[in-house]
Image (tube, rainbow, N blue to C red; front, side, top):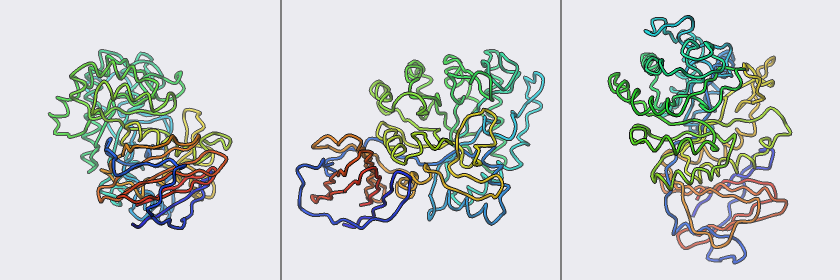
Length: 440
């Protein structure tokens, strides 16, 4: 059997490793995954990041040749092969300015509605990405309704007001229709990014009560989507693992369950095993991981590729079908930035030289996106011995039958895992503080 092996050190430096042959030998002191007895858990949707206003602005202002090269690297099969992207309904905190599509005094008929801002650099960038990868799946999430729909009369902070829920549903439909008129189909939509926080009013963001989200998802959006001829799927929640009890409450409504395709999570708070009570209560529920990007601080845990290996493997092993980074591109200072957070981009575009530098998350994605295809099955395989401390592993079977193993060893000494496949054994050596991808 043929294998391709990619290895990385903690900084993300990648190199092709020498293929290791399968054999009939079994190593009794090395944990072994039995792929011959593996069961499918769920299917993979893809990997990607967010085409924020900030990212699209930076990408759009690159010289044409550099812009095309970068987008090709992101989305082409011979590049990083990213297959999902997230858009913002209005501005997020990573934008050139704070805006919605209907700013100003109260406008319940949405007579002012316009996506003109997005025509500057967001829509051209999305169209360019779709030209490279027509199968790119787009998610859209609002950070805030127009300020006049909220308790603060501002994009920054406050609660969504009950009386404007039907108008907000109309607002979201208008957004989907406007993008469709531009030739861009939005495949999925959440009702509110991070509905449990308003970030203390320091950025575009809104609180959305769970009862309000349930009304939007279960009653207001479905008939509007149908009447508009839109096939956009609804994803619930879009916030941290630690809020799983809110999700459990919302899923208790049969209309909510009937009208959602998946539940979206972020990993900023909580752990991926918090998804297991939801999987137990509602077998077959689908999960997506819709936001996590690098940190500007070089001393952060996220500066190690092994942190990303554990985080991505954890999400997928506990049911997530996708992993979205945060901004595709930011400057070396994490700008444009309205919220004051210290996020970095999947790549850095230098503010003065326009030099492009990949982040450690970019290098981590190299271990996944080019090898794991849409529709691949995440596998649960019997394991004869516990993995050593610091070792984690993801097993995936692609639609073509190839099996991808992504493993990381954060420990200070050499370790190994074995794969039993078609009656043969492959021992994968994991150097101290290293990550590897093996394609069987």
